[in-house]
Image (cartoon, helix red, strand yellow):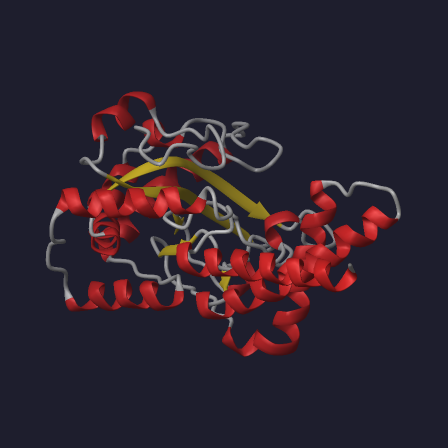
Length: 310
């Protein structure tokens, strides 16, 4: 009986791993394929992607291989500076603009017209070239990161977001960013995959142990097990492969939703101001007018229907 249970567990883990590798998603074998199929539909409706510059082409190729890249133009720098100047002015005047989680207090697309400038510029061309399709923005938020705790927590620890494989997270730095500012650290996709293979058995062992003790672990407990596994394996095996893009204000960092990453834990006295967007492929042009009218406030972690309009 034990041998059969072990065999069934091994087969289940192998099928789960194959799904992660194929769809670049940890949503599971039932959900993940829906998003891949919708991407194919969007690409068929779009036709061929327009030509890009050599520099942007390198960014697209790097993203395809490793799951992240970074770039920025002088225009991106000007857009970021415009946003940051307004934020600094509010802070100097003592306006209470940050929620407890350090998220900006207003909807950002309707507040900062510069955001549309980013997406209509190099960033938009990158997204179209990467998807080979139109794109749509599921949500966008603006954060201020500061050192507030004695140790990193949550997204400041190694983690993966766990959403659809077609989601591209886009981070835009509004001020110059260095490692001391809590710049994002990224583990390439091919190495993230290695962590996922080991994670399946690590989490299952934890759950089995909890079951024998007669208790059901919380989601936070399971997350802690995953984060600890990632951190231990990265420190032991993959530290030299971690990349931490840094640069001037306006630096754009697109990364796949499911690469292992962490960030936002600055050194004392340092700050990080970033916009974070979750972007998906679309079978129709980007609805700029809707975004100007309704904004792109966060309504969930990911769209349940990949074909939904947003």
